[in-house]
Length: 314
Length: 314
Image (cartoon, rainbow over all chains, first blue to last red; front, top):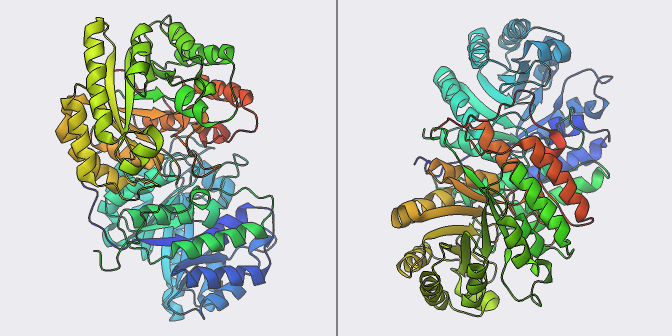
C-alpha cells in the first residue's frame, strides 16, 4: 500500500480570504494583522491574505492591499492574493505579492453566475495577466485554480475531461502553477484519486495545491487520497471558517489545525506549532462571535503520545 | 494507486450501544425499538443493540435483552451485543444473538482501569466463552475486539507488537473474528495502514471490522485508509452519538450517515437508503435533547449529482 514516505507538506492558510469573505462579520485590520503575525509565529509560511475584488462586493476584504504590505514584512512568508481579473492582478503586482491566484470554475453555469465569464474567457484573462506580469518585471507567480472540479450545485456534473482541458489551457496560457478545488464539497476519496492522478500527469511539477471543502465531512479523507498521490500542498482555514454559501451553517474549508494534526501524526513535516495554532484559533474565534466554526482537535487536544514530525523526514 | 474496486461494505450501527452508553439521557425502550425498526427499513443489516453489563453500571442499556429479542424478529438483521465476560455471554446465548463482541484493551493500564482484568485475563475469558458457546448448541459468533489499538489516554503508547500478539491470542483462544478499535481517537491514516496491514496478515478472513472514533476529526480518513487494504466492515453511530468520555463534547464515533455517503460516493455498495438515514437521524436527535451530536451531511444534504452505488458493484 502506498501511504508514501513522510515528506514536507505545506498547509496554505486561506482563512483570511476564503474564511472571512464567507462570513458577515467584518474583522478589523488590526485583528487581521495580529492573525498574520501569530500565524507566521506558529510556522505558517504561505498565507492568502485577501482578494483584490472591488470593496463594494466584499467589504470584508477591503484592506487586502494593506495586509499584503504587512505580510511582505514578515520574514520568509509567501503572501498570496486572489485576483478575479487583470485589474486585480495589477494591484497584486503593485503590492509585490509572491503569488496571485486566478480562480476559474470548470462548471460553465457556475462560472457565468459567479464570474460573469465563461471558463475560456477566464483562460484568456490569465494570458493577459501573464503578459502584464512579464512586462512588470515582478516575480509574482501566477496560479490558475480550477474550482467546481468535482461537480457544481448549479450545473450538477462537471466532466473530468473538461476539468483536465481547462488545466491544460491555463498552463498553455502561461500559468506558473495550477490547482484543483472542490468548491462545493462534492468530492470523495475515490474521485480525488481519479482526477488528481490525471491532473498530475498533465501538470507535473506545476501542479500546486488541493483545496477541499468539508461540506459533507470528507475534507481530510480527500486530502489523504491526494497525499497518496504525492500532492504536498493543501489549502485550509483556521477553525474551518468560511465556505459554504449554499448550505448555511455547513462546514466550509478544511480546518487548518485538524489537517496539521493529521499530517504531523502521519510523519509529514508541516513546520507548524500545533499548540500555537490552537491558541490562535481561540483568539480568532473570539473575534467572530456567532459565526459558525468547525474542527475537532480544539476540543480533544493533542494525543498524549503525539510527537511532531521531524523536519528531516523526506 | 490502489483505491480498490467498488465492493459491498457493511456499516455496523453501534449508536444503540456505544452511542447511548456514552450519554446521560436514558432513551425509552419504545424509542429504541422504533430506531431499530427504522434502521432496518433504511437497509441496516448489522446492529449492535446493547451490552450485557449489569444495569447498575449502565442503566442506559438495561433493556438489552428486550431489544435483542425484538431485533431477532426483523428479517435479515444480524443483531450483536457487547459482552464484558462469560456471564454476559451466557445472556447473549440465551437471547440467541447473531454475534457477541468481547472487548479487550491492548493498553494494560486501560484494561485494568476499565475491565479490572489484564488483557491476557480477557483472552482467557474468551476461551471460556468459546467453550460455553460450543456447549450451548447456539450459532452465536464470537468477536474479539482489540481496543486502544493506537494508544491510550492512560498508558500512552501501545506497542503494535502487543496489539498483534493479542489479536493472535484471541484467535488462538477461539474467537471466530477479531476487530480493531481506535478507542480514544489517536489513529491517523498512516498508523491505520501500518497496523491493519499486519493485522490482516495475522487474521486473514477472520479480520472483521474497523472501529474509529472521530475525536480529532480523522475517523473518515482512517476508514479510507483501512478500505484501501480491503477492510469491508466499519462501526459507526447515527449522528456520531457517543464516545469520548475523556474529552467532553468531543466527537465520538464515526458518523453513520457521513460514512455511508463517503462509501456510496466511492461506489461501495452499503445497501443503505441515505435519505431514510437522514430522517432517522433527525428523529433520534429529537430523543436526546442537549446531548452532543455530530456529522456534516445532515446540514448540507446529498450532492445534486449523488447516485447510490450499484449493488452489482464488486
